[in-house]
Image 1 (cartoon, rainbow, N blue to C red):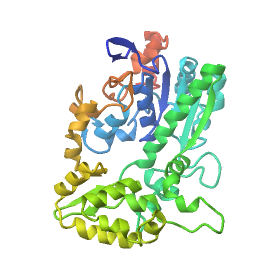
Image 2: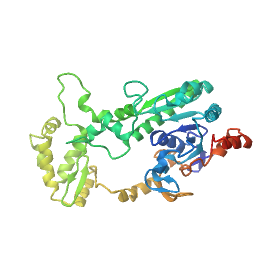
Image 3: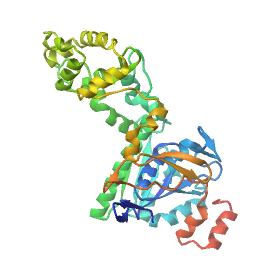
Image 4: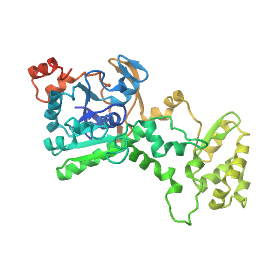
Length: 402
């Protein structure tokens, strides 16, 4: 059992005893299942016989495992199964009665055609939570369309919100990971429902819905109120997400309240702007915001980055220098939070990991086991599902598993 230590007590991780079958390629289902695994679930990753998850081969790689795959798949057991064969499908169906969650990110209809759809598997196990993730959902004109993160960023409004002069991508697998987090939340809700009712259920989730739900509160402020008497206003993202240039670089300052704006102006010797009739109310400030920014920026250019940060810290105004990747990982705050760790991977060698964010009982949960080699656990997993050695040998011999 994988336990966490809380103070002087040794207790179970929150999802200890839950078993997940994961069928996935790339990010969404993999990252979701890993997070559930970090909280104690047993995650069995079902991979094709030949290459396995394509994510294994993208980016920095050692021993046939990429760092991107490792970052999305620790704490899992990998089995190689030909689910396109009848014997492979029968094997999965034999396992399902002892499984709590099935999660996949194939296009709508793919698992149904394989005979591994929600209705069929939940008929074998009425307590099963079957989670299907797709790009656009199971209905509508794009239901069968392929989707990766950039496609969803373009379709859900991320490129519109991020761009100023032209559409611009968030240079991160944002929608993949937002969808993964949403899937975790939905699955844990389904587990709670099952705890109360004894019933499993089908959970359907699209990347475009998860992305837009995440983006909408601030990214679509001027597309929320629909009456004719509503005038568009500067959005929070246009106010907060601009760098303030200094004599030798730049800082980001988030004076998000009137009190913080006042303190920031006083800290920089610009308190006269507080009495300027063009800016003496929040409404007027919004109307003349571009002029206000230009006046403020002119003053900041007289000071170094460190001088600005010191003044904002003294005034208790949120302020930061933009860090590069090495500086991010070297922060004292992350050390205090026990966020970053270095482990020895049996195949990949020394590697850095980021621990799961939640603390339970004030302590971090211990990270899952290192990401698995392709098919590393096939035999031991099948034997844990009450298959004897001879039966497993037969499946290996006929090419059903490896």
